[in-house]
Length: 331
Image (cartoon, rainbow, N blue to C red; front, side):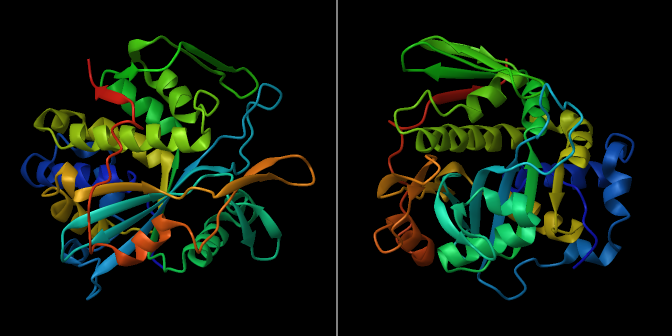
């Protein structure tokens, strides 16, 4: 495995890296920040590398890691749970992408630890155990991984001028004063303009939704789609150095510079209809002996897993308009 480099998470990288490569080739001074660090990780020949390597499809695991910092221990550097879990399947022949979200409280078998919530795998055994757990759950193979910290969401949203959320639910106020720094959000019915910190609270809040984590998944997926659109726009070019600096400190991946360069040039031709968002849902809810509520997945009844193995055949974008909030990025 090549030496790890830190880059932006995959859906963003598909667009951002293409802009970076263009800038570096035409105006090296503009993209100087962060470029040298990336460039040193690989040889020039890697730029032409085909990440698919004669494979029709690749799977990339995206984990959103939470911070363990609290008011009692604000300097904690321990590994947090994977609050967001997404499997990104990319088909190079059909030019399609499927993003499958897995609820963080799904009750699964974790090697060496028995049955636990799926987001414990990352805490207990870092990326290798998380990959193994999800491969076993979905009966599939994961080619690469990307781990992002929520800090990058805050910085990204602020760099883009904030986001507008069209909140079609009753007013909702959320505060988590235990974590450090605290998360607070006050959503009113209608349009709400959120800064980076408020957006992180919005993406992490579960109690605002009747179906808890499943509602939050819809919010996260809607946010990713809007960020994808925004980062394909020409106006983002001037932000490339700043975005690269954010990524260096907040992203870990086994994708090489050559992998990213290839995905970037391939991904720039994608449009929203080429990306399908889906999620795994539990068939019922149970409580463990400790009283913790978890989602139970019946693999024989879960249609999302069946769709994963059929991808990209019968590729139809599900009608999720009633599930996702309207999100607009920028001022």
